[in-house]
Image 1 (cartoon, rainbow, N blue to C red):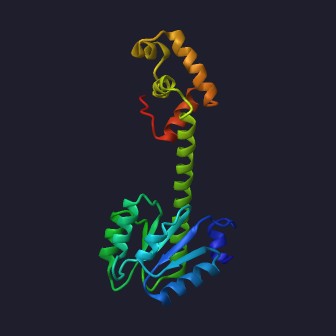
Image 2: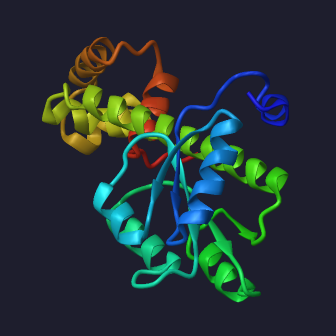
Image 3: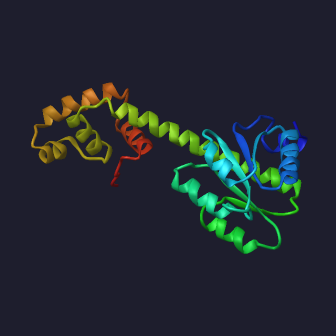
Length: 217
């Protein structure tokens, strides 16, 4: 592993693939060689259409030229967003097209690099992008897990779960649902058991992870 990369990531490798999108074969080959030599997994694409057709999943990032024939880097980024593909995008620009790179960042790119590329700047950008992708991936996994656990609740338990996670006391929940405090307590016990929760704090964390909680403080 490249010593510079090793020092930046604490001696361990990041998960994920660097997807290089550039219509210039010489640039693709040079970037692939540079990143591969530094220990990164790399996939190359001759243009935006080839990349969009592959629809890569999992942890990774996109390193793309902004000026390409057909679908350029900005349009590719827009289409990725429309498809719900969440991969950090680093745009490369030449010919003094900083304005294009700024537009790319305003629409979601996390970094831009000017050609000719400086190796240290490239490696830093890729490391940051892969770290961001890992965070997004973990968040997505947590959300999916939380939603799966919540799906085990009955309709009434789900109603009570949301109210509990929003900080509502038992008597308030009972009045709101036209039930008795005792019935709410029974449902609460079943909710705690099904979700393997030890208290309200666990319910709040689970609801936040699932993206379903309106917490009022």
